[in-house]
Image 1 (cartoon, rainbow, N blue to C red):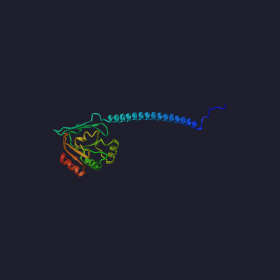
Image 2 (image 1 turned 90 degrees about the vertical axis):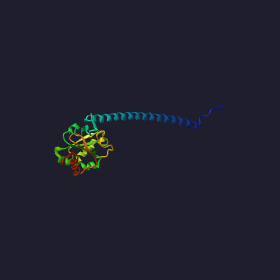
Image 3 (image 1 turned 45 degrees about the horizontal axis):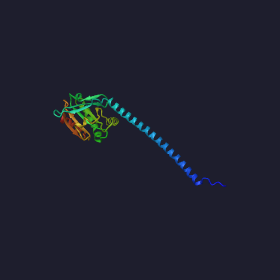
Image 4 (image 1 turned 60 degrees about the vertical axis):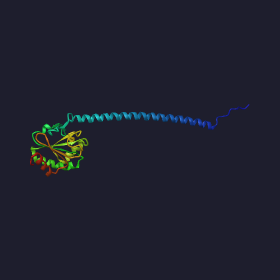
Length: 217
């Protein structure tokens, strides 16, 4: 008696192969996804560590440049200026260091084109005044950098001392907008006698010094 069972049809075998291929592809996809997740986790860890290192380096470098203990204040009654800031060339300078002679304090930044134009005039008047007047530059660094400031000093040829105003603390006592340049004239007792916002040429600076500080240069 002939067998009643029939061989599997080609269509059924094909479906079984398709199912096997689909399962294999799904397994490969899952494996790739796990690898990508592991790499993403490693990359996130590396970036987090790098960020911590950068913050530590920046914080450490600033602390090592004499920025600790920086301060700036102005007595509203007597108009006496009190500050202590890190000098660009190293060390610190305080308002007490300026007492005994008049001082011209000029705020400037590397991005300020007017500052760039006026600084040679400040250097020229500084040379004319000699030791009768202290000239002091202040670089507000809320929007500036040491490297840009170094390039500006070289470009303009100034040789009087410049201070770092890291958080614009000293500048904000006289200029809350951040627009530069700003020049502050101090008498020999450290009192603010005039604040000028805007640029100077050599003649204008000499006239201002004669008017506000009583020194002819």
